Amino acid sequence: MSALRKIKGVSPDAKYAFVAPGGAEWQRTGTSARVLRSAPSGMDQVYRPETEDMAQTRVAGPPAASLGVERVTRCYGTVAAVDDVSFSVAPGEIAALVGHSGSGKSTLLRLIAGLEPLDSGRITIGGREVATPKGGVPPEKRGVGMMFQDYALFPHLTAIRNVMFGLRSMRAAEAREVAVRALARVGLAERAEDYPHMLSGGEQQRVALARALVPRPGILLMDEPFSNLDRRTRILVREDTFAVLREAGTTVILVTHDQDDAMRMADRIVMMQAGRIVQGGSGQDLCHKPATLQVARFFAEWNEVPGVSRNGVVSTPAGDFPAPSLREGEAAVVCIRPSGISFGDAGRAGRIVSRHFLGETEMIHLAVAGLDQPLRVIAPPGSGPATGAPVSFTVDRDEVFVFPAG
Ligand code: ADP
Ligand code: MG
Image (cartoon, rainbow, N blue to C red; front, side, top):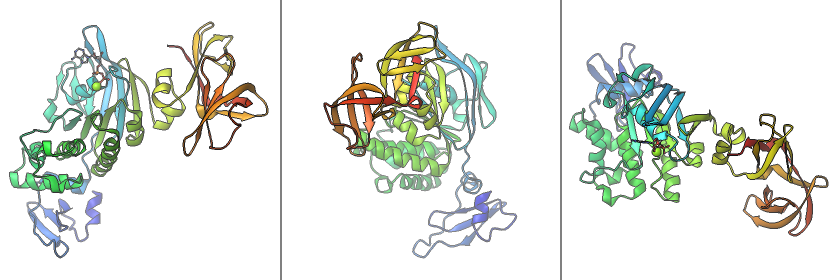
């Protein structure tokens, strides 16, 4: 009830208090509504309070719901698209589900939405069980909003009509007011009467976002929402979307195959591979402590040096690296972070083959006898030896991960 305290003069028996469009402050006691403060001059319109639902939302904060996925499996024939997956998301948290194509992300999202039955496990939303193998709550009763990459807007409806579609249960005049505000929030107030074909891809996606958010879903599910946009638009739309989602406070599950989307938007990242969760954590965790070769590759660029484990060590031309968890004779990949290599007086021998100035940093290619490809080294610009020079280099053990090859 924090917003109640922010609006001055609210009586103790007020059920709701809220700021109407235009800035007037209202409170509602039982069935009567009273203006506490009129809107600033020039905007002095009197608005009837919206539905009780909306009012309550303003007072109690966003109706963000928690999500629980417990040992959920979904098979297509013999393929387990989602294989014994468990994870939970706190109210208001933005979680990103990442992984390569075919890893089961969309299937998991459809299970949460209720568009797919599950074979085992259970799903809860806001603590309420919504899905078990026996059935569950129908999609429209789960309080879940959806936004897909190809979730096209209705072409025969204007932007505002598209947004109002999400508010069918509201009276038309109220729905229009809410939709106007939602469009304003995504920066499209002026385009309300335009049809989708008159809008750019980024603008259409913003309308889709407004449409998904107006019913105030407890959880918003987004499946690759930016992947149809060109790079520049994608970055802008992503930032705006993030701001809108944070303001709305909704719980979000964002599916993406783009690690940049995940890192920039999510509080927590969950990586899937072949239907299973391989690692979950902050972007930093996945970047700095990857649990598998696939996670490492997904989140960062590495020098990958092949080798074989002997007596718990993988010896390579770039150095000898401990690999206690590998079996004797097991093929390994040594991942060396480009920023983990430095030049000095001691160490292994190499030769600088090229240098590329990248602005904040410099990319140096370092040839090492016995390696097919030069190592890539990231260093501060202007540092390090000249092209062609023989050098000594060392590898920081903390910047190296050894995984089984595969
Ligand atoms: P992602 O979204 O990560 O790309 P999906 O969830 O779409 O992955 O797919 C996971 C696996 O399930 C894939 O092997 C895919 O071929 C399979 N799959 C997905 N949907 C169906 C379906 N309706 N029928 C049969 N197989 C499916
Ligand atoms: Mg998918």
